[in-house]
Image (cartoon, rainbow, N blue to C red; front, side):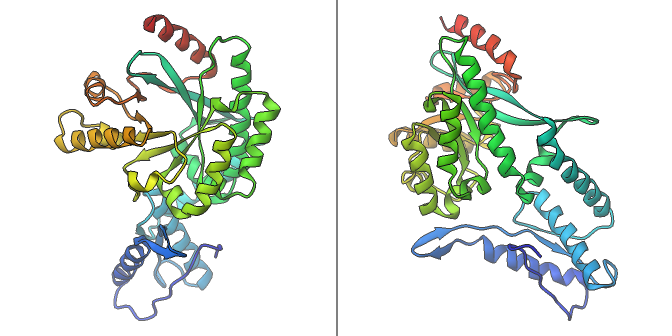
Length: 353
């Protein structure tokens, strides 16, 4: 068992299905906020259920089946439970192969970055990009991030890969600075493991200094759950990044437990509204009301607002009416390789002129 894993043995069950009630209670209990030293903390649980003897005739086999089911719960969105199924063995074998290949991907140079632009609604100009990790497998081609990002996080490989992402973004910004009159800022998604890594601000500062770029061109995106897990530690780390000139934003706002009133304690510059609230605009009255309220409150806290998942002209018109600052999504552009970003910048600058 790993350091954050626990086994529960239920020796007296009439049927394996009875374990479901216990798993549900565990998930529900851990989903409630914890108070630690006066601060609210949030955690989630993923539970795998396996039964004797059908899922394993020995303790080790039973644990392996439960572990496989637990990863099935994680892959289904976390904070839930799954029973072990025989077909999960194939999924587990595939996961193991991906994990093995990922260990070699960084040293083989198989990772690359694509950049999805953000557009200012007032001028139509590109305001910046978000760096998105891509894996070009030598046999499978481009592998979906849905297949490998969670494995990077679970195994801890997200730390060296995440550092490579920061280095590569800084290198790209330096390259653009040689040819562009105005270099667009680039946002990087930080993982929970990176945020918890000792010395993160110092590491980032050293990378930025080595690349010789303006730190104001770098932005870090964090999720609500990352901020809420250990708010005091998050404030300290983010304050150090902010002091170096970097920008900070909350990604996927509206999907976690936080509130705008709570977020004001963090040194944030922007808030990104999750695509689930944008998808049915402007026809869904509830989503429209929530989006308008979030934009208004964010502006009162001097936060820039970016709407994610913008795909239609209807989305754009609604967000313009709600006075959203920027949009991002397939309506603007899919994620682009670096060379295509320069062409897009020139195209949008001409349209905005």
